Image (cartoon, rainbow, N blue to C red; front, side, top):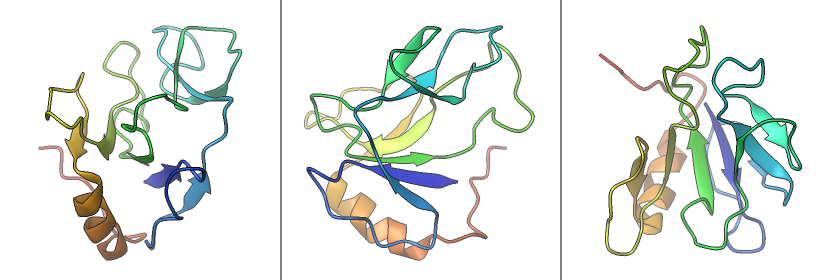
Length: 119
């Protein structure tokens, strides 16, 4: 697991997980059957890729939960993150989303041995 955050909007999250500030060029490949599928990319990307630097606040803090990362299966799902919820708690497209204050309370409890139980 790894944490990305918007340094222009939030302070570096306190956590035992690896943390990196987002850059305007950061993206995540979502084109199935491409070698960069479900991998970090830089924009402009050579494939279809989600932009991680967003106008809304959903990706002010992103935890890459390693869904479909190792081993990766083409078409199983890409860019499935733990991130900030919309103010109205509208559904995500497969991610887990919570309010930012709760994210700030959970991350200090996470470290290298933290994992997401998927079954």
